[in-house]
Image (tube, rainbow, N blue to C red; front, side, top):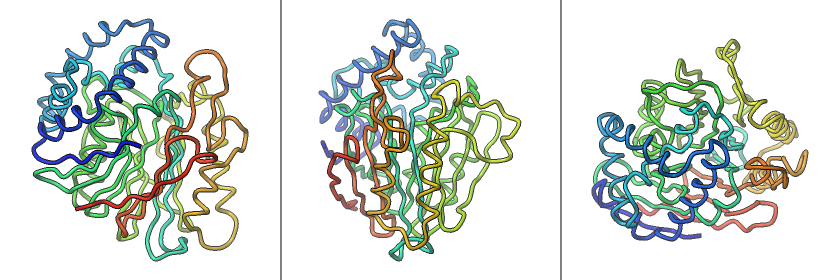
Length: 356
């Protein structure tokens, strides 16, 4: 896996990102060019046009994020609107009325009361188009302001799953439950969460700020607390651990959302329910839970090939190409992460520490 160290102003961080990840950004652009054509019949020029209309609005909402995006474009030699489009790719598809973009992910937090160590463990499988394995990178970022952080993301995209020097970690599960034209994109939210130095501030980014698309953000801290924030364009509901565990896939769980339309079954069938059930079954076994136990859960093949460890089905279109792209297990107190690119049933984890 490529691991890049970035520091400085927002623009400088972006420039270093773009310069170091030119090949990976090119791979990502190829994937999403294919995705928009196959899901929406849109050419990349059509996508750029939508991105151009969004840029001015986003620069008013989160200018630091947009400066970083400008830096990525300059460093990679790619057109600015290409990088904007990467960072709002799901939001663009939702704006077209397409909902087939719910990345099939499974996330979990094991608190210290249940873990076989003294600190909380936060973990996730990120499932998406198998071709994105060649586009994913690890970034260690030391901004001029805000906490240093480590994130695994798609090259060209600000941030995704990760944790920071303040002991705040975040995982992501896409949801298909509403759209608004005036909110903040998911990957902008993730970047802002990773720059917060307090759990409440990280949660406020999700609770107080508007959302374009629905998503579940599993946010935890080294103090041992974890919360699942199911955010939709209309409301946010908060889940808490039960018996020392909190886990989520790609459908709404909170009773507050009982009357809200959830398109998960139309998007990905029953996979989200099966994956959630597999984690629940594993956690009903007595005893403490450690990293090796979590690795076993993340490699689960219940309902193979559409289990927690997702393999391509070979079916028609985009859905047949989805696989687990990477897995991550974070120790927020220790400031370390075990990361593997590819299916965890057959790939090795590499341990990394956040250098502050």
